Image (tube, rainbow, N blue to C red; front, side, top):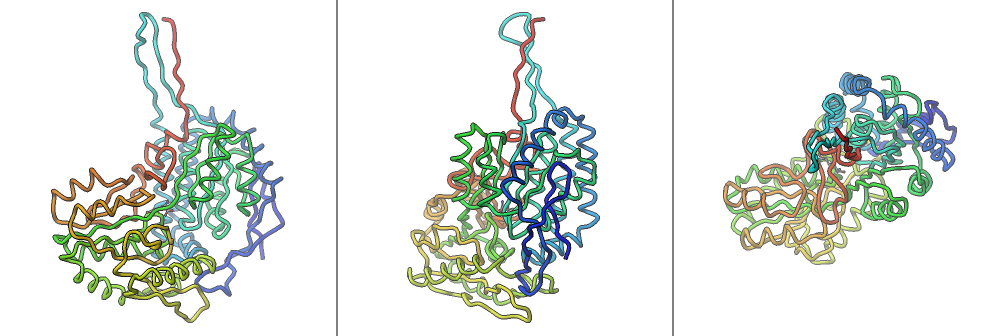
Length: 477
Ligand code: UN1
């Protein structure tokens, strides 16, 4: 089998490889991917550092052309890349193709942003002096991405980093190197100079740790677990390094008595169970007022009966497998914890077998949960959600905000008054009215508050905040 290698200083390299396994069919090896060493990582950082002076001064047209070419190629290959994504991560083929289209759109967006770079010219408070405020690239950026969005998250970190003139050392999640390799190959062929984008696939404990220890990374943008995020933060203080962290969520979906029941059920089922619940934006706490509670639970249970859990590439599959054995164990451990804590298992909870060996778990719904239970406080990252019964809107809002996280917060209601109040008072970076908490646009800011995020927002024009540093220049006229 060919080894998909790392790209360091413009050369494909690496002989040590690991298997990329399909979670829908663990007999299938998607490919062999290089596993980089600490020396590879240091070489990649040195290459990115050497490439920075020229790339930071490259013209905006050159950056536009490369980003646009990459976006176009990803779109042209959406079915093939979507299938690769579904095979390595396990989300369904339509979800995977949708994510691939999103990655293409992100490159198109930042291709445009490259042409819109602008600063400000303002008068000084002193006479005969002019002031210019400009944005300059930050330097070498370390990019560390998770397994749950194998193409969209790399796209939304790589595209702005390049757009604003930075160079990159990119470490994708070990479980899903395939889409990352494909994006790097596409950008490399689109004409990026050597060393501007370096790919080091491999272990977090080796590649990731070497990145954290380096004094040469000016910034690290990270999406992943709270624990690893904290390590990125602590190491970065020591190196005076800018960071952008997207970590967990325990996103609430409030359902009020006046909600349109079918809108509420669609939004809740999508948020909680699509992409196998493996989204930091998934809603795992369904906070339901008592007048609609029983009807909501009955309708959700009916809906869950219609969702097929099966091979990600099979037509008609709504929910693919869990990503790997370790995540499956986390999910089933939490299901046991929920039962012990006294929540009622209303649907699912069982492993299922299909034609191919894979990590298949039923969508799981608890009822009679309280907001103090561990299943309501800790991120599970699987197809598991709990219904928490509340008296009225005020209690629903208080419960929604009573969490260490603050990424996305949803409400299903037909009341303008409650929707408006919720938008203002939800302690979250993103608020959704009559929509799933997950599934976001590619051209507007993404990120959260409290334990969910640290640093400035990702995506849209707000991405410039992280990927640039501001210069204020004074000139005597
Ligand atoms: C989405 O819900 O569309 O890791 C995106 C995650 C998020 C991305 C969610 N950073 O799940």
